[in-house]
Length: 151
Ligand code: HEC
Image (cartoon, rainbow, N blue to C red; front, side, top):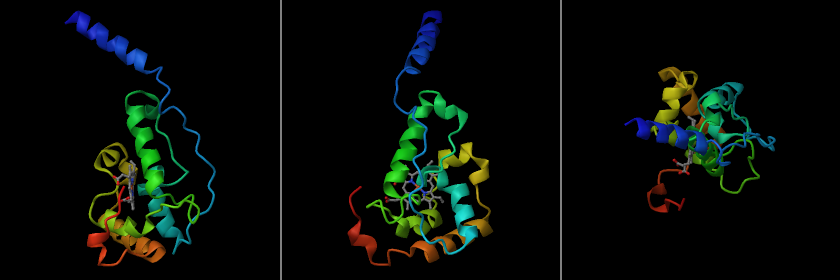
């Protein structure tokens, strides 16, 4: 048992030297969408901005492997799908799904909300953000069932 614990500690220390996920320099903001109101932007930045913009606030534990790997992966994947800091520039940018993702509870991801109480929206705030996202990004329309695009 003691050997096992020592091995765990050694592994924990060793994985800290793996370089993946350590680069937390945010790229510059290139261009933003035409937000329908400052309130929408504010709510978005609170609930979504860490993973869908270049204004990520990296928490202290994002420096500690293996959590750092998960956080880094989420931010990179989040930006790759939908990035309000590269609006009109990044080819794949799924703003038109934002309202739906929020309404259906798909976004923000649950584990993120456990760690970020400030990102939890009240029912009124959630409603406001959904409406604001629709006005800012539009929606895909109702016939999107058969056009689920590849990842
Ligand atoms: C912890 C990071 C994180 C937060 C916070 C977050 N997202 Fe995401 N989001 C992701 C990741 C990772 C993906 C890509 C993988 C996936 O679809 O699960 C994604 C994908 C998306 C997509 C694209 C869906 C697709 O099918 O490609 C939209 C739209 C989206 N998120 C909207 C939002 C909105 C709106 C919020 C805030 C209410 C939000 N996200 C908060 C990580 C995040």
